[in-house]
Image (cartoon, rainbow, N blue to C red):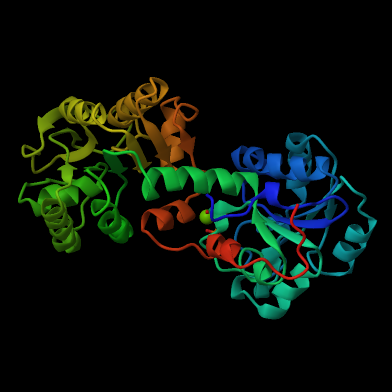
Length: 406
Ligand code: 3PG
Ligand code: MG
């Protein structure tokens, strides 16, 4: 984290501070259905307001593709944001136009304004230079608090940082601190859990992680592709016949690099994929031709838990089974609870992220019991792939002229 400047390094009183938040929250019928991201972004906004900044919040919402789509307005987010910040949040119905400029001109020290969806402008996703400058002209300082959008090289996440002094907000700072502890400078042994449906969506992630960890645990339907690559019959299980060589390459990397690969040793199988389907537990090489694997079995969880006891740092992405369809949640729930217990006991630093993962931890009732749970989906995956995130890289740029250190 030392390489990133944060709110401690800037003097904000009386300044117009542009805060890039990620307010791309789940919404149904005009109501926010999960406020986690709002909760995570509120402290930065509150701190800036308390320090006397004129806070101007920027965010995208959904994918309007460069057009004004009224159902994708950020307007309904202003009230929940205000509730979490603990201050009024004004809203401007555009982003760089007359309404936004007038609202900014009216801001007093300590007041907060939310601007309309940056993606109503096609220039946002094109990272257009003129648009970036127009955004930059709205403020004196730029604070990026949107780790979950940092894999996008867009005007509000990357371009604007070239034109203003910039620092990481508190949520960005927390994400970077924990991800660095988990992967860049971990206490070892380090374990990665990679689950989910497809090897194809996680090739780079597997290749990056297998070279970094002592133990790589594979769960979910993607484990079937590995089992098939070992010559086991997977019956009707979901797997990717085109990815067998990729799975073999990952296994070879593990063998050559000295990483232990933990694949399921037993599976919960059923003849149909539906809640409450009749099922049985079988060794991983005994899946019947008319059966499909929907979860890992207790012997797999026992092996996982034994390995976990030796582990100091864990990174988790993806479930072990079809956890949304009961009772095929048992493996994921047991594994998540084991990680939570080891973390609580002070034996483990645990970091999880990626859309499905957070839902799985919440299902297991342990989303608050990991050391850190990222709000990021795609950005978390790209981090695990070892990629540089444009929004994070932009924060490393040299301090711009006119910037005053506190
Ligand atoms: C997310 O929800 O993952 C971020 O807000 C980024 O959104 P995007 O995938 O539409 O760029
Ligand atoms: Mg998304």
